[in-house]
Length: 354
Picture 1 (cartoon, rainbow, N blue to C red):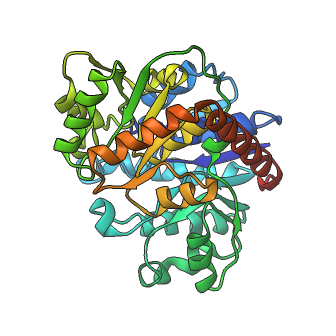
Picture 2: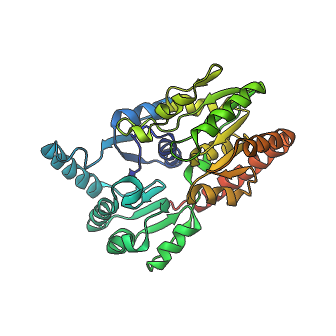
Picture 3: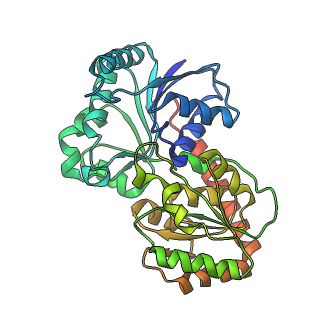
């Protein structure tokens, strides 16, 4: 069996790398040769090897386009190679969450690119499956591309709002949890570490600084957890932003691999990024959420998590949640473990393997 897996791997985003990792681990249960398309082959290879993934049956290929205007001939070769790989595969999977977004979110829209990849797949009459899709573009934006992207494809989405939007376009999608909710990990040691996984633009810097200082005064160790170390986009680089909070007694991880490993020893996590909340859940570590979007709100509602605030939260609000978590700590750890087990069962039962 030969499959192609399109994901967002290679851009130094821990959530995207974990999605790729979890899907590869799932496909590894069968006798499958996997071709993964990546924005940076070396970075993808490094992360997979760090997680003890054998590359014997995995081929990592560079995405088209990549610097199209500067390297037109190289990109022509990449396009031809992409077409050949799709032609020779048995099944194409598109396996990541934030896929169909609008131009306003990332300064460009990928809809035309995904339409092109879907059309090539269907031209060669290959099965096409979308895994845990998150649709955040509007119906009006997707409408011109909907038939090419969705028609004759197996559609799974990770939230009900995406499911409703696909239905409004006259297609059908089933729910499949985010692949990282199927991730297995164990907390290794007791500690007084509070991990902080924040991103720029939402919670005010003044609130974050005051909160860290008060937590330090209460005897906690603070570990900053950058999830995105984007090689070209400074705004998306958590490491640059989190340097603003490196007070005495505060430390930080230096790579996404170190960030992943650090969750094993966190006592509590202050989470803003979706996959920080998911990693806290899969490690059964109670967390305080700072929610800023549909995707984080949806997860918090699904698990019934009360320790959540919006981006206008005050220091005392967050400290109050941490104090309550401390009083109910073991009970909350057990609640997260049970919810994690249900997600794992749901993912295994719902995965659209063909």
